[in-house]
Length: 186
Image 1 (cartoon, rainbow, N blue to C red):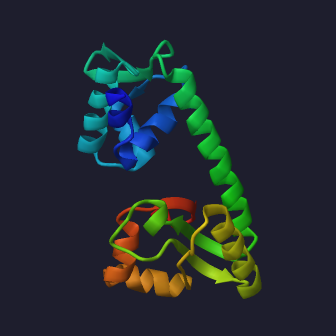
Image 2: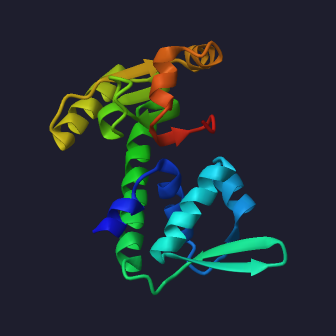
């Protein structure tokens, strides 16, 4: 159990798992991973070290580059791959539903969905949305998760302005969120 507890501890780790598990035939070097995940190199190195110590990753040195690939013989490989694939499919479905709400440039889950205690907002949408469609979507989502969903809708201009001003409300949401749609590359 201790290995499983170590496995899911950070956003970077989850991104890394998705990249490596969905590309089991490929090897990646550290800087390539950093660019693909849009994450700091120290975070990537730390997570690679943890996953390698667990036995999930194989490390290969070629010249001055260190390459990492997934170990398909890892005891939980198929289980982890299944979880990543299921999550990707459910994220795709959620993204499709949110796109039908209107012209959405950015959408994310936060608050109760991510354990982000800095914000009371569970869903942030940026763009223009149909109020009727949004109301139905939120009611359906509340039924699925058996709790009230607190949401906020911002226009693209308001989002940009708040981000530029380092608005505490927005920054609290963006410290820990799960992206649904991201045309801004946040």
